[in-house]
Length: 234
Image (tube, rainbow, N blue to C red):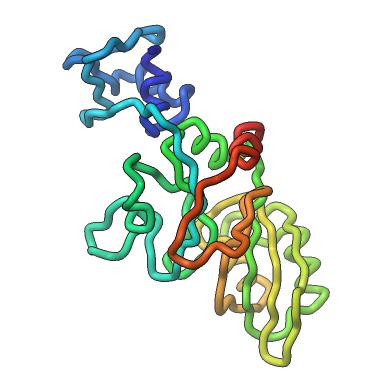
């Protein structure tokens, strides 16, 4: 197997990024630095990336997780907080989260051991819409909706046009659906704050055409073949 594919199959990064790691001297095979792009990994070879031994993945696994509040999107945590790794601990393969969800945000998270797919879904050029349902304080006026749809400054960054609709307006708060293409830190919360509405609750309900649906909080389901094919075509 080509070295870059071996690295990608281990869930480290895409093949393109693997080529960069190889070129920069970050990859060793059997203790020796390898910079040859077409290097073929043989059975029994020990491959290290940045000093850490890796193993190519045989079986690719793709799951949708309903992340509860209070879990961090990481495989481990030095502060002993709950991690999303605990939600898929009964799956033999080591899965990694695709992108992130804030500690105080719940909802859909895709986890996989497919490094190439992870790269595809997180790279800005692919513009995969993420859809959230937010409970925001106060009244969300047409003027504020127009600003969100056009793009707002969230502190040194102007967001791309968003898809926004009010699901229900009540006297003291509103339920709003918003879809964005970027994934800046706490972006949705900052966007609503920029127009004067504080987010009280936030849940991600879709990534592209992959829906959270009725998946119970703290549970996961394996993606079906159609969903996997959709993600790979992005």
